[in-house]
Amino acid sequence: VSDAPERAPRPGHDARTWLGEPSRRTRVGYAVVRALIRVVATVFGRVRVVGAEHVPATGAFVLAPVHRSNVDFALTSLVTRRPMRYMGKDSIWKSRLLGRFVSMLGAFPVHRGTADRESLRVAVEVLRGGSPVVMFPEGTRRSGPLVEDLFDGPAYVAARTGVPIVPMGIGGSERMMPKGAKFLKFSKLVLVVGPPIEVPAPADGGRVPRSQVKALTERLAGEVQRLFDEAPALA
Image 1 (cartoon, rainbow, N blue to C red):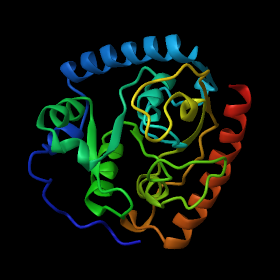
Image 2 (image 1 turned 135 degrees about the vertical axis):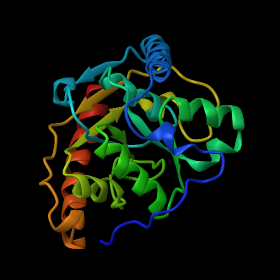
Image 3 (image 1 turned 45 degrees about the vertical axis):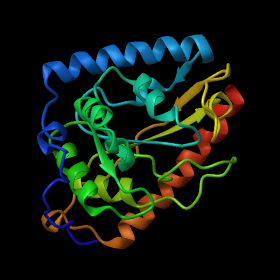
């Protein structure tokens, strides 16, 4: 897998928002939003987190959750108090106000369904700066009990940086807000975090063979499936 090309950020998105340590304003804003998410998740879903001890207390990592609902994006923040950076669908930034808000919280855009090399480059730089990144390996919301057709993005950035991948299953979120729903429904929520998948530090200037990325993606798929099987059963 070759290095992603160096390209300027898209207009309207300041790369400095994405890279380096979060500012004080970002940390405070993130903590406030996270607290509100916990309140809503508790009221509507009596949310329970299993395996939070698997989330690294320091250093960068890739959090790789299953994706069945729009609320999954918010729920991932409940597994750790540490501010995390998020890959978000680029349509969010069509609203200047919403785009500025999610950028402040550390989100950056990705073209869903494609190998967005610019976004992968940004994710690599964020990880090298020591911040965790949330990446949905399915790429978009799916339906049903099977985890399949994963994108290589999470495996690629982890292999490039040598950071662990933390798999995660989410139970109950699809019942809480299925595709097409505009309002939340009451549904028990269970988030199950698995042990980190350790990734060796890259050699040869950070380049990684495609076979290594594919193998890592296959291993991630198995772990996410296992956790996704467990989470709904607990929910």
